[in-house]
Amino acid sequence: MTDSIWGYDPAAGHVAGTDLVGYKVEATDGAIGRVDKHADDFGSSYLVVDIGVWIFGRHVLLPAGTVRRVDRDERKIYVALTQEQIRESPEFDRDKHVGNTDYHELVGGYYQSHRA
Picture 1 (cartoon, rainbow, N blue to C red):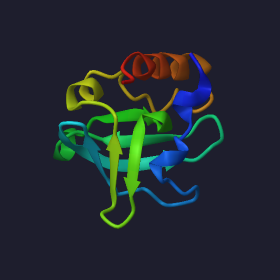
Picture 2 (cartoon, rainbow, N blue to C red):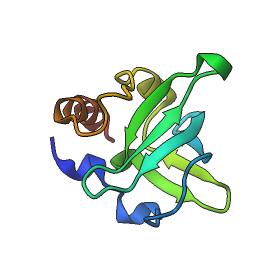
Picture 3 (cartoon, one colour):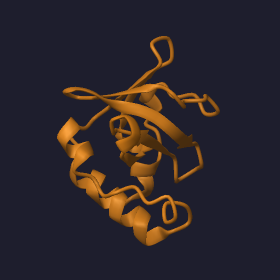
């Protein structure tokens, strides 16, 4: 796995430091959720997206390399994944996602295998 999955593509239009919390996330086949948290850390940029409904929310970790485009005017983030690919992704683990290289390799490997 390369670290590129954890960095924004320069063509995506993301400006480091932009607060993405609350942005809608659009998969290639429709809306999937909203950004709950994000980080612009070099080599470890990501979005935490709430894809659940109401109280039964489910969160997923999307590496920045899955982002195709950020539309600041519409407050939307377009990702290069289908809704099913996102729903089938590894479960987000709040305790493991920071500083756990095994967890990042698991998540990054999953998304790397689904890149177009």
